[in-house]
Image 1 (spheres, rainbow, N blue to C red):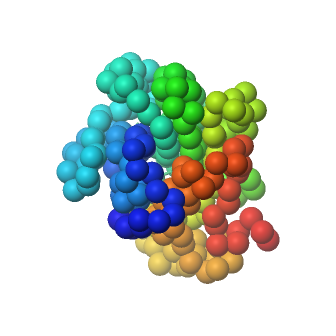
Image 2 (image 1 turned 135 degrees about the vertical axis):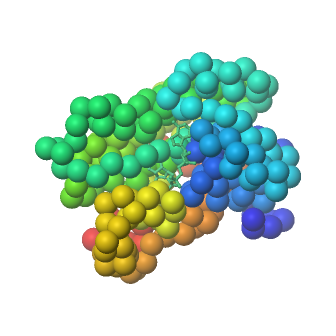
Length: 252
Ligand SMILES: NC(=O)c1ccc[n+]([C@@H]2O[C@H](COP(=O)([O-])OP(=O)(O)OC[C@H]3O[C@@H](n4cnc5c(N)ncnc54)[C@H](O)[C@@H]3O)[C@@H](O)[C@H]2O)c1
């Protein structure tokens, strides 16, 4: 948790972070709490969510499946105010088009794309009331093609498009931005290495490092810092922006 009494404060704001129990979401919950925001951490993994919330001031853990409207609405019904929504929950898939089964494609679209629509729509009245800030977590995968990531790149392209669309529809009522990380050291990446490259993890880790011209993976805290900035009053002029944070990947 970064303590900073000066810039990028979020005192008095309430933030909801989906997928808050792990990786980028977890780091974001800590960063926003450190900036003074009250946090609602929403995840499928309630145990992890609760232990995270217990260690932070003014934080609440809630069970939310971002693919299920009733689950989302149950959380929305308990909120009377919301200033920040971070649509972060997401899953990965590896395969070119020939190796993406229809069920896998549907699942990825549900968790990575439809969820952003469902959660944002359910919380929109509160966000409009507060002239809130939405931060969608996209990926470089929404900006460039990546071998063996047909379904994942498709979903992240849609997240970028939804960001632009909302910014165009509500230019004065909301701020909506999208952060596009390169590869970040989280359980998402460890899960990929375990599942697809258990026998050659370190070799593959080197290849993942090399995708970023900087030669390393990003840290979840680095992504969380940018999310905090984007939500802050200092970023008041920013909406509809797609912000790479990728060690130089998309500059190449
Ligand atoms: N790690 C990376 O390299 C990387 C790079 C670019 C973008 N991203 C994106 O960042 C986001 C977070 O990734 P991460 O690396 O922190 O992943 P992670 O696997 O560490 O965490 C994802 C969290 O989302 C939760 N989640 C999954 N499905 C859910 C559902 N249906 N409802 C509620 N919660 C659900 C999981 O329980 C988990 O806590 C994702 O959208 C991912 O696509 C990650």
